[in-house]
Image (cartoon, rainbow, N blue to C red; front, side):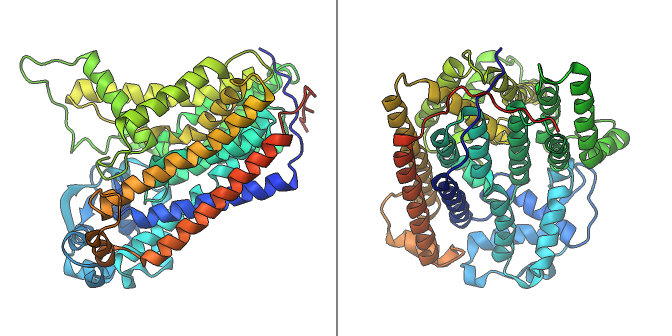
Amino acid sequence: MQSSIPSAPPAARWERVTIAVVTVTFGLWLLVWALVVPVFQAPDETAHIDAAVHLALGDAWSAPGDLHVLNAVQAAAGQQATLPSDQWSTFAGLLSGAPGVSDTVNQMTQHPPAAYLVYAVTLKAVHFADLRWDHAVLALRLVDVVAVTALPLLAWASVRRLTRSPVAALVGALALFATPQLASIASSVSNDAPVMLFAGVVVWLATRLLTGDLRWRTTVTLGVVLGALIWVKGTGLPAIPFVALVVLVAGAGVLPLRTRLVRTLVVLGTGAVVGAWWWVHNLVAYHRLQPNGYAAMRPPKDFPPGEHPTLGHFLDVSWGTLARTFWGSPGIKAQVSIGDVLTSVLTLVALAAVVGFAFRRGPELRAVVVLAVFPALLIGIQTYTSAHAYLTTTEVAATQGRYYFPAVICLIALSAVAWQRIPRTAAGRRVLAVALALAAPAVGVYGLVVVGTWFWNAATLLPTRAGIDRWAALGPVSPVVVAALLVLVAVGLVVAVVAIVRGSRTHQPGGPTPVTTTAA
C-alpha cells in the first residue's frame, strides 16, 4: 500500500469563513431539533434524565439494575400527556408531590457516571428545582447541543487531511445534515452526545497521525481523548484497538517498529490512566467488563414450542432497523421514520460508493484501510450483541443505528475519498460536489419536516389549526423563536452551498507533493 500522502494547501480565508458558517449553522440546526422533538420522545431519554436528577439530588450511582426511575420523573411525563405546559410543575413541585421511586428499572447505571455528573452539575447550576421541569430538561439538551456542534469542524479537518481538497472537506462537513437521526440524538439528553464529540476528536487526531503528523503532542493528546471517550460509554471501547492500530501503522517507513510500539504503549497507557478506572471497577465488582442493566427487564427465555431462531429473520430485522435508525427514525420507540425505501436507498448508495471506490490504490490507501477498522469493529460488536440477544431472549435487540455514530467522522472521511474518485473529469467533480452539497441538507430538512409534523401536526404536511393549538399548549418556546432559528439555518446553508459552488470552480485536490512528516 502506498503511504506518501500529498499535502493539503493552506486553508484560504473563504474556506475558513465557510466552515465557521457551517459549524454555527449546525449548532442552530441541533437547537431546532432540541425544541421540536418533545421531551421524553428520544430513545431512552426518560432514563437519561432520571439518572441525571438522581445525581443532582445527591443519590449514589447504583449497581446495574438497582437504580429505579423517580416517581417525580414519571409524574412529569404524566403532566406532559394530560396538562398544557403552563400548568406543568417545577421539579421541586414534582419531587414533593410524587416522592420516592417507582418499580421501573433505570438501566443507565450499566454505564460510567461521567456524562451524568456533567448533567447533574448543569442542573444544579441552573437551580433546576425552581425551574419548570421541561425548561430544566432543555438545559440538559443544550449541553449536548454544544458538545456535538463541533462535529462539522472535525469532519472538515479530517476530510481535508485525507483528500487535500477544500471543497470535499466542506461537503464532508455538510454531510452531517443528511442524518436526521444524528440530529435527534445529539439534541436530546443522551450519553451518545459526548461519545460523538470525543470519538470525533479521536478520528481527527488519528487521521492526522495517518497523514504524517507524528509529533509527540499529537500522539499523547490522542491518548488523553481516548481516555475521555471510554470514560463516557462502552460504545467507545472499540476505539481502543482502533487507536492502537493507528499509532502502530502511522509513520511506517519513517519510524522504526520499536519506536512505533513504544508510541502505541504510551497512547494506550495514557488512555488507561484517564478512562480505564470504571472498567477496572466493573471487573473487580461484577467480574464483567460491561454489566447488563437490562437483565431485569429482558431476562433469558426459550423460543416457543415449534419455533426457532432463523438467519433470515435476524438479517431482515437487523437490516431494516439499523438502516432506519441510522438515517432517520426519531421517537422513543423509533416510531417516526423518513421512510424505509429512502433509508435503504441511502444505505445502499453509501455502501456501494465506499466499497467500490474508497479502497482503490492511491497514496491514501493505508489511511483509508485503517480508518475503516473503527466502523468495522462497531458493526462486528453490534452484530454479535444483537445475535446473542436473539438467541437468548428471542428478541433481535440492540439494533440501533446510533451505535455507529461514534464512527460517523470515519464514515464521512471514507465516503469523501470514494465520491471524489467517481467522476472522471474536473467538471464532473464540480457537479458532484454541488449535488452532494444540496442533497445532504435536503435529506435533513425533509427529516425535520417529517418529525415536526408527526409530533405537532398529526403527520399533516400543511399547518393546521389543531397543530398550532397543540404547539401553543405544549411547545417549549414561541413558534416565532423556532421560525427565526430556521431562517438562520437556511441562510447558513445557502451561504455554504454558494461558497462550495464558487470554490469548486477554482479549487481541486492538490498535486503529488509529499507531505512533510513531523516526528518532533
